[in-house]
Length: 279
Image (cartoon, rainbow, N blue to C red; front, side, top):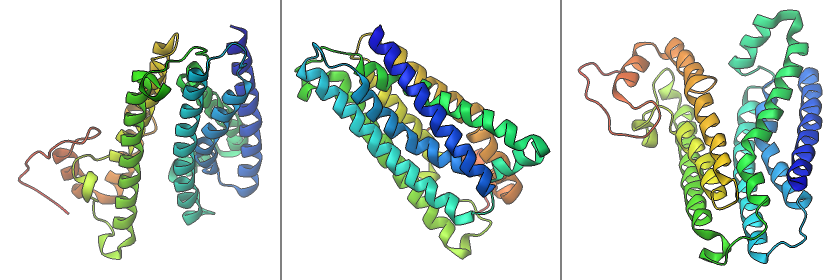
């Protein structure tokens, strides 16, 4: 219990400092979109923090293997996503992402104050979503089976790898499509985007499923399922698909409506037939 409280306290201190510094920089740059970059990069330090803060007294070498493995997975994913978002934000700076520009318009003179609270909530969300990672570090016994990862560790790692590769491929396919001037105003249906309107979100969610499955081999590991459940809620109902589709309908109109009628919103699947298709 003491180890869990120490880890939680260290994580909370880290995210408060992280998001306060981010808010100060965002205020100076007048670009609140940088919080997405910091949020993505921030999971790496949280995983490393867990690795070093968790006491190693009476801990088996197999448990340490699991700790180091989950830390490596988080670091790789965090660096990839953070770097991708850094490039996206830099490409349109000093203009803010439309989501934050909309909030700035709605909040007016209270923007800076409300953004401070919003940033701190993002930090709190980092801690909650890191629950599977923390649970792995609270396992002091581990197992010698399956390369020291255990069955759940191996399955979770495979799901993570599939999610990472799928998300990376979807991001590249979309970037390549947008880079062609001939595609301006058209709907991307290249590669994975032919089977899902949001393959990047689906594979991002799969990464979190991988972390949760990895944690199932630890005591109280089932609590880690909160992370992919919460992520799924945000993607399907809050800031993911609803906002993205609203913007796409405004910019692409009937072409995107046809895309909605024929293509799965989230899970990649075969297209439905339609009599009216727009490119």
